Amino acid sequence: MGTLIGKSSFFKPGPPEEPGHAYVPIVEFLMRECRGKDILDIGGGRGAYSFELKKAGYAPLVVDINSSALEDARRSGLATREVSPTEILEDKSADTVVMIEVLEHVEDPKAFLQKAIRYARKRVLFTLPCTEGFEELFRLNLTYAHIAVSDHLSHYSQKEMVSLLDSLHVKYKLSLGDFVFPYASIVMLRESFKCKILGKLVTLGIRVLNRMGFIEKRIPARFYGIIEVE
Image 1: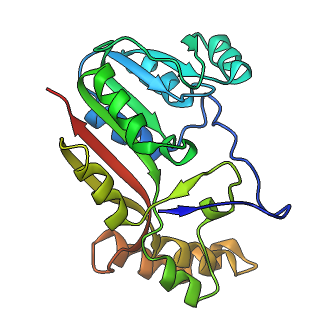
Image 2 (image 1 turned 45 degrees about the vertical axis):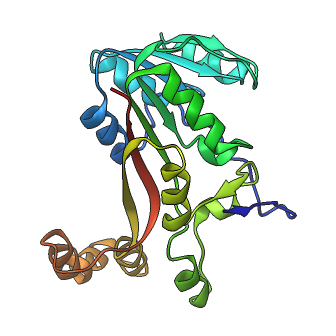
């Protein structure tokens, strides 16, 4: 695990997503893996993901320390609860506990996960940035966008994340997703053409091969985690 300290104006805080602007792969992950109806969205901010869950028939509660973000969530018709950083919630208070891009913001991720497990009746779902493959990117003078976020306190490789989860002595599943290659390469090549149609035509073959699974996905940018509580 590394500590991130932004020292220049290049580093910016990462604002919570607005309702209606949730990241589609994360939404799909939640729809596929949530169990039960009652959802506790810890660190849910403005409620982007709870908004999608509510539309799908779930009953989410957005919990956060940011009163301004929670006001936006309430305006979207979501149930909210403002808490202090050290506040303890009720055990078994929701079927599924959701933490989307939260663990990288907390000082003690292990303790935070332990609390989330106590709050869940069925499952804990989480996502957070992954730095697996960082050395390969660094050799190319590239890096992940989430390295330049000033309010991230830590980052994890796959080995470090597995070590953290193993220390909890729980049943879990950890997946790597949002692979940088070949997606980023395709986008950069396509957008390098002044004529957008020509860019799409040139990358068509690569995109087809990618969809057919002939191109190996490399350098994941995000962890998708499931902890079983039952």
